[in-house]
Amino acid sequence: MTLVLAHARAMTVELARHPAYVVPTLAFPAVFFLFFASSASGNGPAVRMATFTGFAAIGVAFFQFGVGIAVERGSPWEAYVRTLPAGVGVRLAARLLSAAVFAAAAAAVVVAVAVALTPVSLTGPRCLALAVALVGGVAPFALLGVAIGYWAPPRGALPIANLLYLVLSYAGGLWFRPQRLPPFVEHVSPLLPTRALADVLAAAAVGAGPPWRPWAALAAFAALFAIAAVWGYRRDEGRRYR
Amino acid sequence: MIAAELTAVTKRFGSVTALDRFTLVVREAEVLSLLGPNGAGKSTAIALLLGLRVPDSGAARLFGLDPRRTAARRSVGVAPQETAFPPTLRVAEVIEFVRCHYAWPLDASVLSERFGLERLLRRQLGGLSGGERRLVAVALAFAGRPRFVALDEPTAGLDGEARLRVWNAARAHVREGGTVLLTTHQLEEAEALAQRIVLLEAGAAVADGTVAEIKRAAGLTRVSFRAPPELILDGAVCDGERLRADVEHAGAFVGSLARRGVQLDELEVRPLTLEEALAARKAAR
Image (cartoon, rainbow over the protein chains, first blue to last red):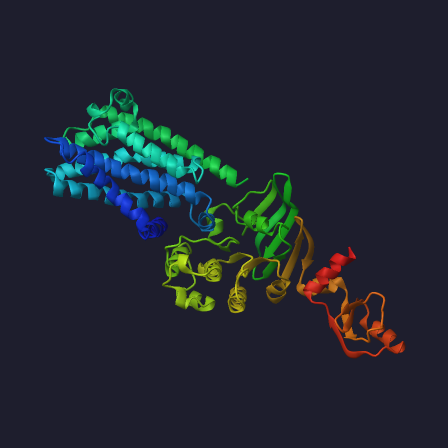
């Protein structure tokens, strides 16, 4: 456990000292929230705030896992860290912890902007429900990020992650109500993991009970992405340990 | 007690055979130097010993364990040939990060004193010079006070002072009962540090012994003197104003020259250095 904290601390400190990573990660979702969602009325702002915390958190999953792993995979520092007495689990748990810090921060910025600039009020229980939905709902995307990290070539990871991130966010309804999407997107939308995420977050925001169908979909996606991630890791290990 | 062991390992990369049924035994409390030209298989041998790669055939053992096991790596500190750090981390942070993996790490202040890192501790690694980064990388291998330290070309790119610090740290480590495996292509380094040398060429050991043994195996002594320009000797080489010859029996050689009436000005007779012995070895084959 001490080791996990040490690894997580090193990763977090390292990233936190890169303003080029920190500023966009924290500011981008909140700015998008203001562009797209702050003018909604009724339950609108609360729901948009919730889905934009999802947008913020999966961004971290895509970039810190996807791009981070792909880039570090071949780096001499990562090769050195492998010679230290720490198992693969330590490194992975640390990565998760470090990503959680940034995801929580990015989501918190969205919430702060929403509370300050839109007619959203947050009660304690709502906040808790949202946090739970966020943690559970983002987990499959963390696995998807890991899968991208091990499958994508280092130079290809950033465009791939960007494309998936923006397209999935848009088509899954994290930016607009799904009903406002163009008809052809609306057909695909219910099949996407981001749509399931939008649904569980929206339910949490309006105080509805947890909807079972999107949760089941998220669990299925988590299983799928976990297989892809483990497969990718094995494949990468096989390649390096030739 | 054996610290690390490769038993008849073969490792191929595509059509290139990096190691060919290579056996290496590193005993505790010695500095063993793997010596050889670029591409001889030195780094591959280290990678196999550390479990970073697995041999195609044969076995690697660290203190009797499979080196890929975390338990085995608790006894190991490594300075890989390639050095890269997360650029924004500070030197002190990276030292702390490495130390916390080990049960009885070296005191951070002792470590920075041994390697002269005191004035670098607060600096970020991305801002250090290549040589400074290299020195930090080598220091990290000792940070956990592991029983076995593997250094892959540790002093490449270091200045004289830093190189001396690395040598002294390796000696101190062995004095305290530790073991050091060192690859180098600098004979001077092997000669200064190693109790034992394994000479690697094209993936196979071609010599194994103490520095003295390897020199003795060459069986030659170097005789040189200031010679008149017209003098020509069989087997001798002109070296500026001097003539030199590597001979088996220096006494007889000098005697025969004296009997021929050759002026032996500034006569020098000495054993070969390791480098010269290895060059003579090569020439003889």
